[in-house]
Length: 252
Ligand SMILES: NC(=O)C1=CN([C@@H]2O[C@H](COP(=O)(O)OP(=O)(O)OC[C@H]3O[C@@H](n4cnc5c(N)ncnc54)[C@H](O)[C@@H]3O)[C@@H](O)[C@H]2O)C=CC1
Ligand SMILES: O=C(O)C1=N[C@H](C(=O)O)C[C@H](O)C1
Image (spheres, rainbow, N blue to C red):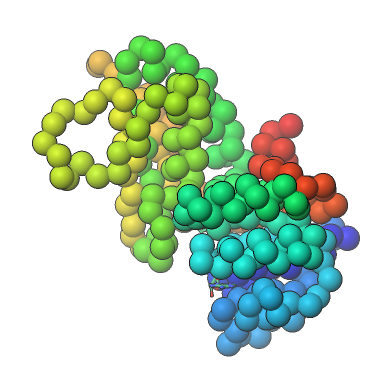
């Protein structure tokens, strides 16, 4: 049985994972952490990770970028592997993730779903053919109106997969409203839409002369992310220090 601390336990994803863990005989949430504690939970809940004194094999994190620094310090100090799913991390924080992964196992992924992780592989193949052929590449993501960060971590991760396959030639463009010039071939546009309760949509367009190829992933519920996170937690428990990602869990 893998004992997990749910960091961000009272948020949308924390609640989804609490439900999934109850149905899974191989994982148990032994404690939660959340800045919001005004609800009843079936496990002890602390209002900050530093206060959590419950023994565990892994931390699952879906919280807030501001909470990630303290979480990494805690996991390094207690030597607990961490599945880091929070998005919107700064460049400095990504560097801290690198440093932490030298001392403890860290699995960071902006998207825990099987579909998006497969899409990242497919995009690399498409890019190798369509980028040299001059196709323009644009990403459009849509999310609910409660989301704090934009563009989504997934949109950036999809762009990074494309750029890796293209030898790093693309520059990401998030806003065209301040310039009056034609699109450069080396641009990779990323646009964010926010509204209602959209769980998560990502579209990648390869636009050429007289044809457009579109890849689209739609998440219809948070369960797709939750299932991936639970599998990642089981995979990461007991692993040695290092940087892991979802391809280690689901695409091997
Ligand atoms: N990697 C993936 O597959 C996915 C990542 N996410 C990301 O996960 C994060 C959380 O998403 P949601 O659950 O939708 O957000 P949410 O806003 O519903 O939940 C976040 C929770 O974190 C809590 N929190 C805030 N500060 C905290 C702190 N210092 N310590 C502990 N808890 C704290 C909040 O009180 C809240 O309950 C976001 O960054 C989101 O983009 C969301 C879905 C999938
Ligand atoms: O905040 C969300 O909801 C989501 N965030 C992740 C992201 O930023 O990519 C993943 C998913 O799309 C849902």
